[in-house]
Image 1 (cartoon, rainbow, N blue to C red):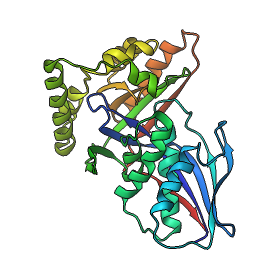
Image 2 (image 1 turned 90 degrees about the vertical axis):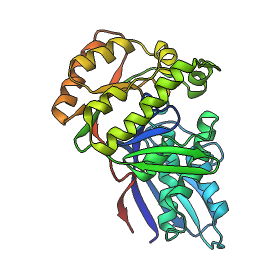
Image 3 (image 1 turned 135 degrees about the vertical axis):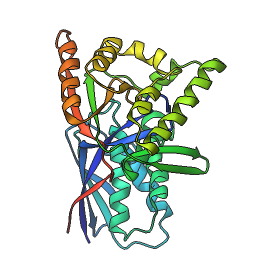
Image 4 (image 1 turned 90 degrees about the horizontal axis):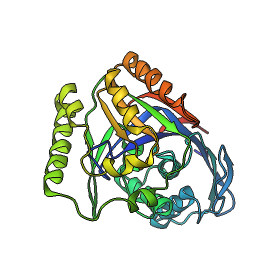
Amino acid sequence: MNEIKIFAPATIANISCGFDVLGCCLESVGDEMIVRKTQDKGIKITKIIGEELPMDIHKNVAGVAALALLRKYSKNLDFGFEIEIYKNIKPGSGIGSSAASAAGVVFALNELLNKPFSKLELVEFARKGEELACGYPIADNVAPAIYGGFTLVKNTDPLRIVELPLLDNLYTTIIHPQIEIKTADARAILPNKIKLGDAVKQWANVGSLVHALHTKDYNLFADSLTDHIVEPYRSKLIPKFEKVKKSALKAGALGGGISGSGPSIFTFSKGNQIAEYVADTIKSIYQKTNFDFNIYISKINPEGIKIISIH
């Protein structure tokens, strides 16, 4: 194997009540990457299509994640690698653009090196790229990208990822208003202290959401999608957030919230038909504003990163 082309999926992180710990993987939204072996040693990014991002491997999340993996690789290499990135996930969108690049490259390298590393180790390498992107080595986007489905970051030191079951007919509708919200800024507005009562409600929702996934209980899942801690602050940064969320629920969505640190707003629906109706409903809200936006509808991706071709 000398070259691999992969699909690196978008992800939703936080999932309402699960700030920094819950994430899920999307099926129909994502980047593509090509990683190939080269005669020259070392690693370099040779092409980025779709967005203007740094080619310097020390300034690009894919490069940083790749270097983290290669530093841990125990064998001497007599070849190098080059990376091509085809961005379809807009940076700063809140649906895991940096995570797709970081997770995608370590997955590809692992395949080219005959899989010396576990999925957990790949998450560890990928979150080094996330640290470059937002200042924190978060794992709630890279974990679902690598594992697929729903994941829970049980611990970060040492890192532990819990794979969660899927609801069989769960779809998500995401609206991405074309404004930029930096993760660092979205974290800066959060309070340093929270009320005990809000904390109790929040961890009760996390527990019930996990139970809902295990028991295939759509009603409990919907009832758990409430964020008492982060959303009240971050929602102020997103135009029409409350109207979008209320209209989506009225249109039949199970619930929703802020994807990552925003500005994307996600909703979950039971079945594609409702997800499409939710999309039409929330699209009509933003069509009356001056904001450009994108709409995505996707089933949950149970596999994570996918191999497109191998040579």
